[in-house]
Image (spheres, rainbow, N blue to C red):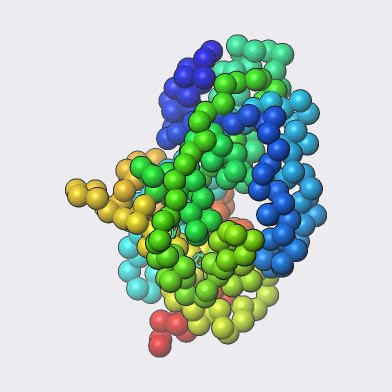
Length: 314
Ligand code: SF4
Ligand code: SF4
């Protein structure tokens, strides 16, 4: 198979773009990542510190790895949730993307293994200690915006990244190039001032980020953050919503094609906040099985919903 044929196979599996990054180069962003941790910007996500060194080289995740096959999954869609209903980040409205994307990567792996039985593979989706966005940039799939999202100039930033590490040596793609120019829309719009500058780069300080507090944090949320959460009960898309690369074009609600993938469209109408607040353990279990919302745990989502209900009274 040529890289073009591998790309075509990835697109046929439902990915929107596929690129190839060589792993012979060092991870240039690793020093920056270490400084980001040293500055405490990971907040309470201690697991990031624990496995930090693994991010210095993908070969630590797969011995002899030569190439990262990088795929993206579009979840672009308008988000209009009526007041009083559960508002969650776009990517999290349906199934857990880890499960969906892992299945697709496994199918891609099976195709490649049929052609190259001696090769080894490892699918990585978000949870593996890897500088995924750097590899995606090197694979030509987007460049770093000031909001730290990867931006594809034609498709915006509403996409997830899935990687298949392999011992195969495949021709690398041209790295993506682009930039924000003088735009500061995301920095200006972030309600908590979480996008900060340091080490010559814009970065997100998770200690100020609504996504961190509503998804990762266990326990109370400080009042200074809670009052800025507005109606976001799980995650926050504000710094993507204001980005010109995600803005509408004529006859199209977003720059990206709105996803048609049922796994990334809302599973149904959002429940009301009152309904969610009344969920017992059993209802929680039924409503969140196989969904990203589970990451916040039941008490976390209840905490967020209570905050949003208070915010909506103001
Ligand atoms: S996700 Fe929300 S809180 Fe976090 S940086 Fe973006 S706009 Fe700010
Ligand atoms: S909003 Fe502007 S500054 Fe922020 S990522 Fe998009 S283009 Fe860059």
